[in-house]
Length: 228
Image 1 (cartoon, rainbow, N blue to C red):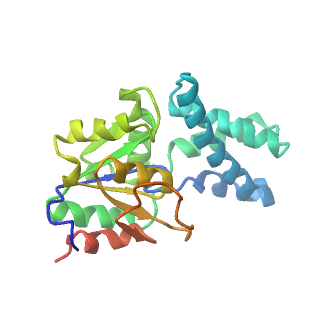
Image 2: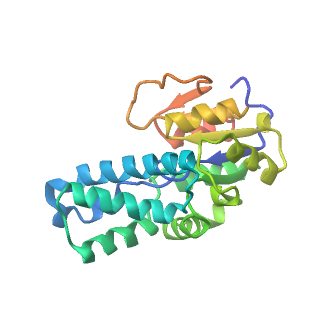
Image 3: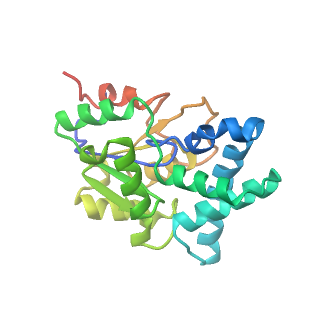
């Protein structure tokens, strides 16, 4: 594909892109019953909202604290007061599974000589745990957390941090995210931007639209010419 010839590295957002953020609540769906999907949706929405609000307020806390606060809100909204259930949800979130296509996709990219990395709001401990639990730790070359800067995406400093860590210009990096706002910010930073639009969302009304839109990460190796 035009524009991909100079790509040397592939960066991925973590939560919702590589790792299934609904998996924790889904795993306890027998106990949560019809609450599990609304709980998962509110948990994720509040997790993102709190990250943005803390950035604007200048009141940074790491993503694990934000994740726990968001879960507490979601549980309270559903009228669920069960400390044991809360802890199990957090334990499951700390050890999330990746989407099914992720390991094979990463192996193809690495076989083609591309550097792989994660650029995430997650704390280093969260990212390391998720990579281990999903079996992809040996397929990721760089774990880059916003904790190195102390502010959340989509602050431009986060995307510049990735260039510094990879020692590559933006044009040599393909950035992948399932979050529309994140992919627009990555494109604004100069990355080749691939939006993983898993649920067929309408395009965001933001500047710097993505270069490519796909439904699954399994399509990425073909786009980047990383297949035999």
